[in-house]
Image 1 (tube, one colour):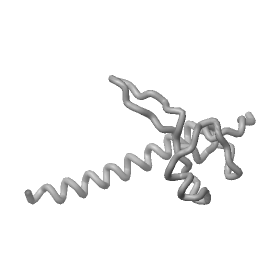
Image 2 (cartoon, rainbow, N blue to C red):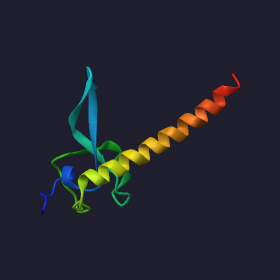
Image 3 (cartoon, rainbow, N blue to C red):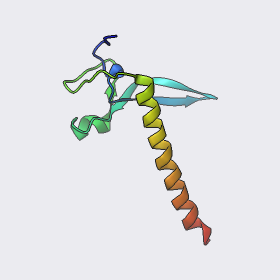
Image 4 (cartoon, rainbow, N blue to C red):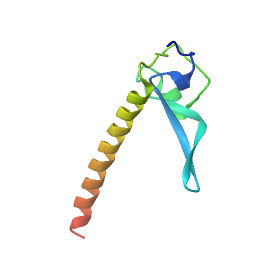
Length: 90
C-alpha cells in the first residue's frame, strides 16, 4: 500500500506525545531519526504533515516503531543499572 508523503508516514519519523491525566496525547510534532537529515532539523522537530527529500516509506510502521521502543527501553535499562551501581555505595 502506497503511503502519502508526510513525515508521519516516514520510517524515520518519531512521534511526540504529552502526558495528560492517565493517558498520552499525540502532538502535531515529532522528530526525524534519519542521520542524513541536518541536525538542526532533527533537534528542533518536524510537523507531522511536512515532508522532506529524505522521506522513505516504511514497510511496516508498527514493526519499526516497536523496534525503536525496544532500543530505547534497552538504553534506559542500561542507564538505570549504571545509576543503581553508583548509588549502591551511598
